[in-house]
Structure formats: C-alpha cells, structure tokens
Length: 318
Image (cartoon, rainbow, N blue to C red):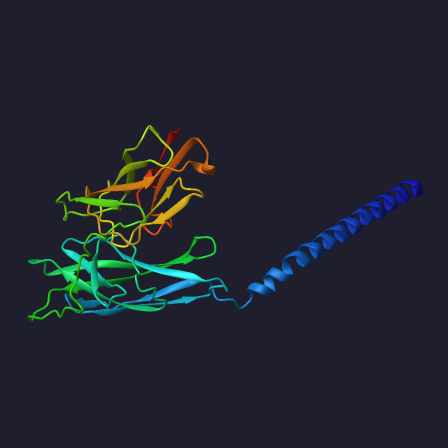
C-alpha cells in the first residue's frame, strides 16, 4: 500500500514539473511576442488612418463653378500628387482649369489636375442641351511621387441640375479645346491631324497607340532620313490635352526630343508625325542605328493598356 502511494506521489510531482515547465515556456514565448510587436503597437497608437475626405455640394447647377475640395488625413512625410475624375453620366461633362486661366472640357473617367492643386480646385459642370439633371461621383486620388503608387482614394456625389436662368459665359470660363500643338525639334518635322468625328457616347478609358509607318531600311552616314509614325486613340474615351511623347534619335550621343503638350484626341483620332534628321549611327561608327518613340512616358494618362505606347526601328548605316 505504501509503495502504491509513493508511486502516485512521484507521478503527480512529475506532472506538476512538466506543467510548470510548459507554463514557463509559454510565458517566455509571450514575452518574446510582446517585445516584437510592442514598438509597432505604440507607433500606431493614436495614429490617424490614412483617408481622403472629398467635399462637393450635394446639389450643383450647370455652367456654374463650384469648389472641389479634399483633405488628406493620416498621410506620411512623402510627397503626393492629386488627380480628380468623375463617373460617366448621360449628358454631363466637367470643365477643369488649365494654367492659362481658361477651362477645358474633360471626358468622364479621365484624371485631371492641370493646375497641380493640393487641396481644392474649381470645376464647372456642363449639361448637354435637353438634359435636365444628372448625378455623378467625383473621385480624388492621391499618388506617392516617390514610387508612383496610388496611396488612397476618396469620393463624393453631386447632382447637377440645368440652370433656370440664362447665363453669359465669359472667355475666361469658357470650356476650350486646345488646337494641335506644333512639333518642332531641331530637325525638320510635321504633323497631320486626322479626326474620327466621334465626340459623343464616350465611356471607359482612352488608349494611345503608337506605330512607326515609314522608316529607312538603310542609310548613308551624313545623309538625311525621314521617320514617320502615328499616334492613335484606340480607346473608348477621349485623351485629354497635355499628353506628350519622346523620340530618341540615333545621334552621337542619342538625342532625346520631348514633344511638349499635345492636343485632345477623341476615340479614333490620329496624328501622323514626320521627323527628319541626319544619319549618325550610335557611337559615331558604321553599323546599326535605332530610333524609338515613347508615348505618355510619365504615365499621366490612365489608359486601357500600356504596352502599345512604344515603338522602335533599327536600320543599317553605311
């Protein structure tokens, strides 16, 4: 009987020791986890969640400007760019300011902020003739300049009603469409604008596509060659004015020509460019030379696809 009691007591002692060890191990693991997450906990404690609050009037009137405002809370020390857009609504467009002080009509689902506003900008809702009311959602997007990543978005709704009184739009607030921009690099150049005629039923996004249509197969050093290429909006919405392209020409060293701001392109619109330049192969030697075109190099235009924004050609130089 005594032997049985002693065995039982020893067994209980072993179980108690194992339990104590388990408790100590669990406590040590908890301390390690607490030490690991404690700095993060205190760094986030009291920090405001990043968000953009967009303010617009719930009710607005066609042809009358109102303030599109926003507040970016909880952001870090990074620098941001801000762009606005509005959802498509039948018979409704918005006009946004450009640096010249005029206003430009912007297609729906197209980002804009030509004056680099950081907290507010005036916009003008414009209803088409016969349209009495339309509701749209305005979206404000914040993009980190360091890596181009969209940080946060905010939205607000407004219902636009037709004006009940006749208004006179002054030239400083009249929506305008810029004329084709001249393309004049140091070498000879020319442009031909081919409109499609489609300016209504816009939806979705634009899509700029570049294609080299004529290039030399071979050239003599010191000779003159001509490069032709076209840029077409193959999307379903208009490309706002201000987009650009760069042409890299095989001078010595390679010469990069920035086009400057280009005109608005409706779906199907095309511009044919002609560049003339002297033949100088890369490195100043005989061999091959390459010319390339890159449309929207800074990705300012939100497009359906991006891979059709570049084209290049290689030819032999003797």
